[in-house]
Length: 427
Image 1 (cartoon, rainbow, N blue to C red):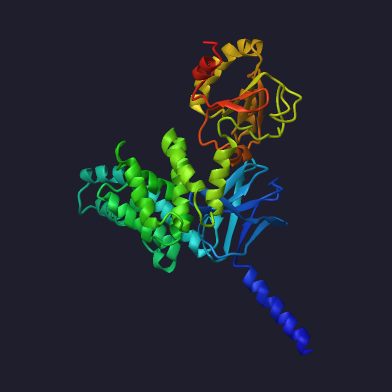
Image 2: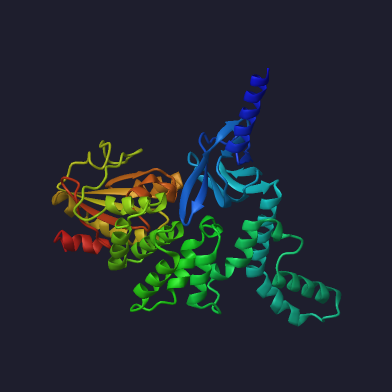
C-alpha cells in the first residue's frame, strides 16, 4: 500500500515538474485548422515551445520548460496567428474569426489583459494624443469638455492607468526598460546600449526585440567604425557566452540582410571557429548560410503544389541552368521585377534556363491570381515567412535570386534580374 502511494505521489510530482504552464485557446466550431504550434523567442528566432492538442473547440499547449516573454500561436493550415505574453503562468484566450482567420483575441488571464491594455494605450498615445494636443487650444480650460480633454491628455502622456506592471517581471521590463532602446531614444549613447545589452536579464532574448535594439546600436556607427563597434559589444558580452552567441548570430543576419558581405563572412568565420559548445541558435545561422554558399549544391526542396511542371522538386527540374527566385505577390520590389522576367522568359528558355519561383505568400487567392499569370514553375507553402524555405535557403528579403548549374551547384547570387541577364550574357 505504501509502495502504491509513493508511486502515485511520484507520478503527481513529475506531472507538476513536466508542465510549467499551459496555453488554452478557444476557437469557433467552424475553424478548420488541424495543426497548431506555440512559439517562444530567442532573439529574432522563433522556437517551437509546444504542439497544440485539440479537444472539442479548444486548442491546448503544454509548455514543459520555464519561459517568460513574447509567444506566438500559429495555425499553419490556415496561416493565421496571434501574439501573447507568458509570465510562466497559464494563459487562456478566446478567438474570433473572419473568413477562417483569427480577427480578434479576448484574453481571460490577467497578464495578457494587462498587455492588451498597454498595447491599446500605446496605440492611442501614438495616434490620438497628437490630435488631442491640437484640440486643446480651441477649448477653455475650465469648460467641461476642456477639462475632460486635458484629463485624457494627461492620462495618455503619463502612461497606463490601473495596470500594475510591477506584478509582472517580463511586462515591466518590456514596457518600461526596453522601449527606449527599441524606439531609438536619441538621448541614449552607444555606451548605454552596450551596458543595457550586457546587463539585461534573459527577457531581452524572449522579447523578440533584440534585433531592433542591435540595429539601433549600429545606427551610431560610421562605415569606418562599424567593425570596431561590433567588436566592442561582442568583447563586453564575451562571444562564447549564450548572449554573445545570440548577438553574433543576429549580427550575421543583419549584415546579410543589408548586403554587407565582408562583415557577414568575417563573423560567420568567427562563429565557425568557436571552441565552446555552440548554441542551437548559432548552429541554425551557420547551417542556413552554409546551405547557400557559392559553389555548393543547393539543398533540394520538395514542391508542395507546383504550377507549370510535373517535377517533384528543385533537383528534379532538368535544365542547363536554373534561376531560383523567392518572391511574394505582396512584394512591391517583386512586382517591379516580374514584368522584366516575363519579357525575357522565352530568351531564357532558348538558352536552357528554367525559372523556379518559390513564393512566401500567405493568402492563397492572392498567390494563385498572380502565379497563374507567370509562365514558369511556381510553388508556395502559403505560410508567409513561416515557410520552411526561408530558413533552409537563408532568405531574409524578396526578391532573392540564386543561379544554379545543371547539377544544382550555386554559381551566382544576383541582386536583381538585370544582373541575372548580365551573368548569363543575355544583356
